[in-house]
View 1 (tube, rainbow, N blue to C red):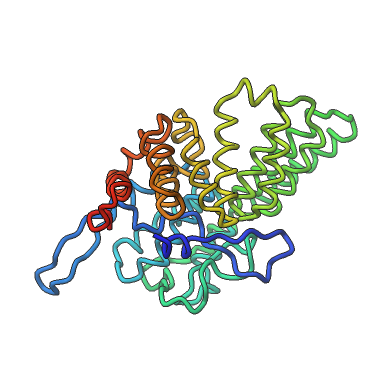
View 2: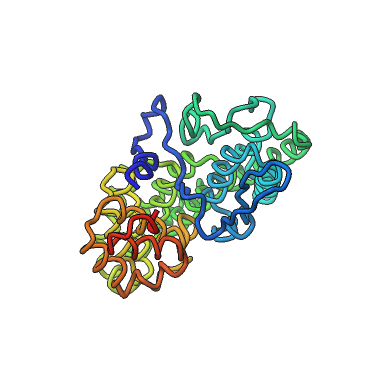
Length: 358
């Protein structure tokens, strides 16, 4: 389990750290316990893991960057299983077409995507998602029959340019009339516009600008949460930490909106994970309100909370803490039912039953 955590580290970095290697996306490295079974083929006598990709990816918000990052990660590590790889590309293509994400479409399906490389969002980092020396690779989508549709790109670029012109004209009008609420609303619309296109840095910039025009704590808290989500997408964990602190100052919103407070707590757990504070992250995941299930699935699913908390707990907590904070916790023990093999591993570990635990 120590090895698992070492491989699952994330490195926080700021906007100026483009030369650093980007950390991997927040994808379970456990081969998704409750979706894998093992069968033996009669021709090769080798075990082949089966993975229900559609069921797994349906956990995440259909418009989210998280969904794309996880599909990219799975594609990177499924090059030997053409059916899964092709399904990943199909889902990514459908996503990009439906939501107009031209940036991702160019990166994934364009001619600049060299075979053996997994494309990453240039707005996240200039380096690849995984080390270039990694033995895992994914072939270019064209080798699997996918066509790079330049007509789709031209149409989307034209409609996007028109939409952006309208938003900029509305913003100028609102600024002339000094209408704070209108200015804030238009900046948020511009943020959504750039996010849909895959231009996450620009989306983050527009959303942060909207905060200058918030007129109450609720608006300020909602903007903070949007910045936090974009920061996680971009893996700007220092930014995420700063805006969690800002959001926590909206005390009336925290006390009156339990879902908002739970989302901040989940983001805080991810920040601890990014900083390699595994015990702290495990306890934060374990203490999340049981009412938070898939309301934050633009970032992580209910199964992810159980998986991260359980694995991090195994790697960093003693048996007594595992028993009290995870297995006996009224908030967390119900989550473990979503990942039965992990639940059983925890039970075996606290009993020092190492063989069945493994």
